[in-house]
Amino acid sequence: MTKIQIDNSEKNIAVIGAGIIGINCALELQSLGFQVTLIDKSGIGEGCSKANAGHFATEQVFPLAEPSLIWKFPKLLLDPLGPVSLSASYLPKALPWFGRFIINMVASKRAKNSMALKTLNKNAIRYYQPLLQEAKAEKLLTLKGSLLVFENSSDESIKRQFTDYKNAGVEVLLLDRQQTLLLEPNLHRNIRASLYFTDVGHSIDPFAICTTLAELAFQKGCVFHQAEVLNISHNALGINLTTTNETLQFDEIVIASGAWSKKLLAPLGYNLPIEAERGYSLDLPPCKKEHQLSRPVASAERKFIMTPMRHGLRLAGTVEYAGLNKSANMKRADMLFKNAQHILTELPEYNPDDAKPSQKWMGHRPSMPDSLPVICQAPKHENIYLALGHQHLGLTQGAITGKIIGQLISKKETEIDIRPFSITRFN
Ligand SMILES: Cc1cc2nc3c(=O)[nH]c(=O)nc-3n(C[C@H](O)[C@H](O)[C@H](O)COP(=O)(O)OP(=O)(O)OC[C@H]3O[C@@H](n4cnc5c(N)ncnc54)[C@H](O)[C@@H]3O)c2cc1C
Image 1 (cartoon, rainbow, N blue to C red):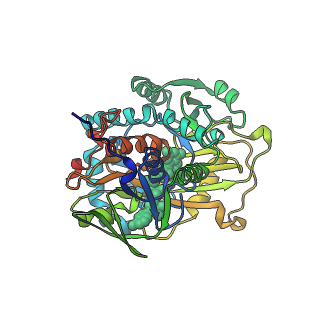
Image 2 (image 1 turned 45 degrees about the vertical axis):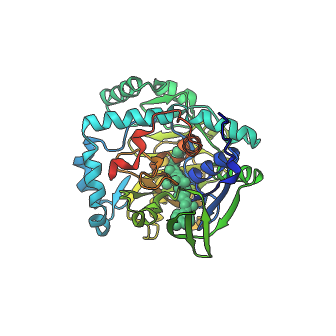
Image 3 (image 1 turned 90 degrees about the vertical axis):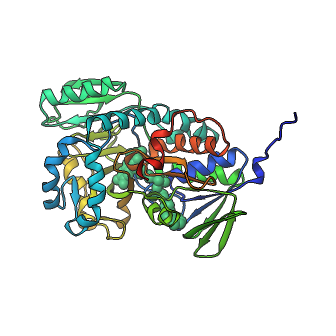
């Protein structure tokens, strides 16, 4: 019997969303020989992927829905500058998401979700390496591990967290104050201990990862359309995308539109409980060489991270639930500097009133209530694929997500079990 050879180049695929997830999907699909069009209402990497903390955080295998948070909820409402804040006016809209979030605190669900995160994170960095090599941009990924530092947590709590990571198979060392300061001499003496995640990495320029990988996809033939997709419809010939400019026809599409995905999926009959977890970053000029960090340092208590970047030091983090449309509260970015003063002995000078607008940034993390992304073929539409909802780990999980989408569209077996990432869990 003659085997029919399917030529991938005959298939036109659109990827909606040029964030780190869409870019990785577009690059993988174009490398597999498909004809790919990347579409975004803004530019390449201009959404949540623009100024994140650049941490390839493969150690983050625990879902965010943690039972102890229940008792902290009332405080969240009261402190607009706390590490996690919930705008009172947004509460009614966010309630259904929080309902699901609380359900995911159940121990059996946490264990299952943690297992799924582990499989996704396990080889996440390995999938980036050949891409960056091909783009001659290996310098954009540094493998020096990262630190989680503790100021006032009890010994018991620090040891418990260490054991939890160890039991989850994460490569981690428990360091005392002296050992921590040997690794990062600019840390404050009030740091009691740290967890050193030896296998993780960081990027000195996460935005450049977006533009570099997108450029590689374009060199291979992928094209970029700047337009907002307003509607998705399907007919016998494939999928029609109505955009702000025109109507475009494709054989298959990948929806990778981050925190904005709900609007595109609802008319297709899918319920997507996604919430924008707004996070902030603040860029500081370089410290003196002897004060520079070598790796990302996160604060366990203050819930933010400091990453050495090409341009200087980036402080990033915090979570704010206030939806997609409310303007940014840049006091939250300024607050990061105050936090850093407790963690570092020397910091570059910073005066919020003199800061350039480009130093402060807010991004909408696309977050699902169970902390798992949605990576699947749409169950009711065989030519629509979904790659969204990567919450705090979109940079980390970008390359593996692209790989999985490539395998799904090529009708190959996926390397990992992707059943936990199906949208059917919400429908
Ligand atoms: C402060 C902060 C720090 C972070 N630090 C890290 C970190 O250290 N490590 C890590 O792994 N992750 C980190 N993250 C999370 C990470 O940035 C996100 O998970 C990731 O950027 C999500 O990528 P995405 O491609 O799904 O979404 P986005 O980058 O938001 O891309 C979605 C794109 O879709 C486009 N779009 C939406 N709707 C439409 C439409 N209808 N038509 C056309 N285009 C559309 C948008 O314009 C956007 O460009 C951080 C996030 C924040 C906010």
